[in-house]
Image 1 (cartoon, one colour):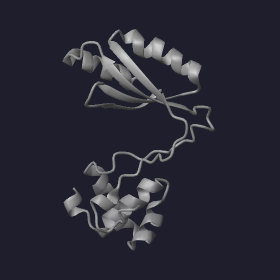
Image 2 (cartoon, rainbow, N blue to C red):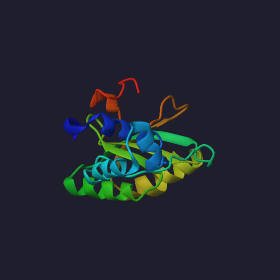
Image 3 (cartoon, helix red, strand yellow):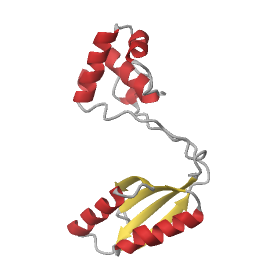
Image 4 (cartoon, rainbow, N blue to C red):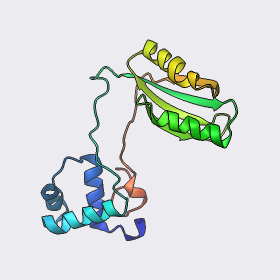
Length: 165
């Protein structure tokens, strides 16, 4: 869709990816449209799948969920059935906020959020290792997040948005 992403669409996307709470009227004013055409553009972007959903980002630290860990996971036998079973199991675990298949020595990279080290240990033992599929896990505890964004780098697909954000 980037080929048909005009200046107004790019600006709309940039605005709502940084603040999904903006009203259509506020977005319309900022991009120089009236509300109805602005709403139609947003609807078209949603229908095209460019806008997947709108969410609220919570402060995990204030909620007592400040323990974050990246884990590389290697399965004992990475067959198609085992990969599918593992992925279905991971999809049901709210502590896993990201999961990706990766290249290299591991099969998956997980980003896990819990309360503390003990909760993380229980999570590994009771939920990951109990699957009976894992041969190796390497964990890296996040000391401090330097950058954490959900914003897509629109400047890479649209000349109407600064590449620097």
